[in-house]
Length: 109
Image (tube, rainbow, N blue to C red; front, side, top):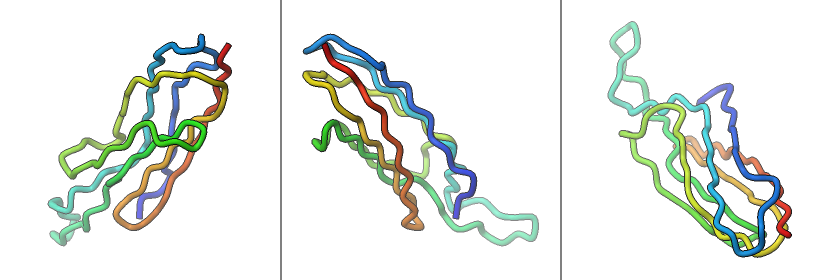
């Protein structure tokens, strides 16, 4: 199980109605592929973030499946069109079933 997992978000606090904004996320996670060994030569079990989902006011706007080839601390960036004020909710799930969540508000004028 990953420890000290923290997310960082870059979401504009305001935007014009109908504009396309860039969302940037980074989560600190070791992303262990399951192919490395510890000091005793024992294989370290796979532990990666395997799914990422973003919703905007409850509606899914982006999701992706991550694979072991993704580096540690995965950075994800994607565009979203905003039409109303609300909240972006982010969710990462790893192989152990751990769920990491974060959110960011946006005001649309």
